Image (cartoon, rainbow over the protein chains, first blue to last red):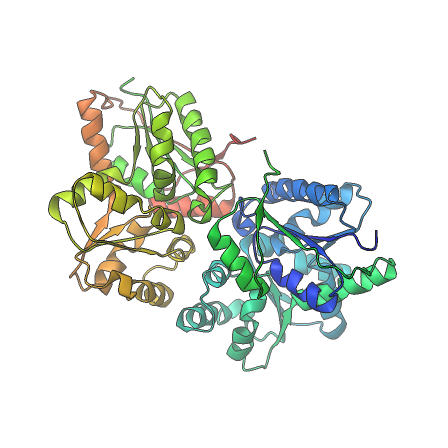
Length: 265
Length: 265
């Protein structure tokens, strides 16, 4: 069981930022990644559809005998947060929201900004979860749907990204925040540009590293840390194109091969 | 049969620009529209997946007794151009590419630019079809994948759209063109901005109006023009969200209701 894979899934390629952080924090772990490129992006889809897709993916990762599953997508994390709890699985299923809420809740209780997809922001999941912590933080959230396709197209650190980022972050809904949660697994790739926009006066929270550290603690607590000395990662997608593979290499900063598998028919 | 509906489909909401042009040219026709919002956008998906989705949608529109079907999506038009010909349907199935090739082929034979999604551009469908016309046009094509999400998010006629449009159109692959084909049904909404970029020195081809006129001629030739005096349009999507409905109203410039229907399970 210790050397079983960690299952990670996302609507597409963005969740690889979490896989990458995990490889840094826990280099002995092996990963089975599933990117639902057939249905991407989830950010515009209905909660019901995202729940259906996620359930099928979780069943696939369970069939791969994963010891733990990470929902590395904020839209899916918010959509399945409640529905998945009703289904019994024998392994822990973590999302990318809870570890961030816990971490940010320790240091900050006011004027927290959240940016993400329409699905994530309209779910109000961050506000609801902060309330569960008895933290009456004033959450200021804004859907920023053009950022994910912008990043996927490689528009980073140049005029287009700077124009789009400035347009979103200057929105009055984000005025006077002290912390900004990047509630989309694509956004770590523009973390520096966002920090630059704020001239480092706002703390920009990258969930990938927080989530990776949280998983490390969780596996340690469960005595499930891998002792494997071999590398055996697998990267599956529901729809293969050369372009997705190119994006995957870009997000992971290493050369990998994607395998197409149909788990939806 | 004359008063049967015209079936139109797209990966999402963009095909409504064709529906709108059709309503202008043929105000007596009734339309059944299907937007595959569950799988949108098609532009990034594999040809095989787009063919699967399109076949199911065509079967759905056939079941609605449509007299003609329009594939109002360039990615789907290019993906199914060959596969669909192999399948026997009793009604005409038109795409948005052939009418444009025919029209542009009449007036121009050199330095034609084409912009569209990755799926459309990588299919080289425009180049192949121009060759079939014995038109050795020099086609210069460029994938412009950020334009569709940009338009869907309402970034039109302002700084972000101007920056993105300038970035794409200044690409050297589009240098010295005389005509530019907008090979995506979203793009009519930025036709003016594109013309402005070229200071009217390049003829910008909006496929929606050309396609609508072509359908009118086709229906006349087949003696299938509607004589109906009642309005009875239907707008279906595979995934309903408020945001899609808002976009639909924006694209069609009138208030409509979307109905969700599951034709894929």
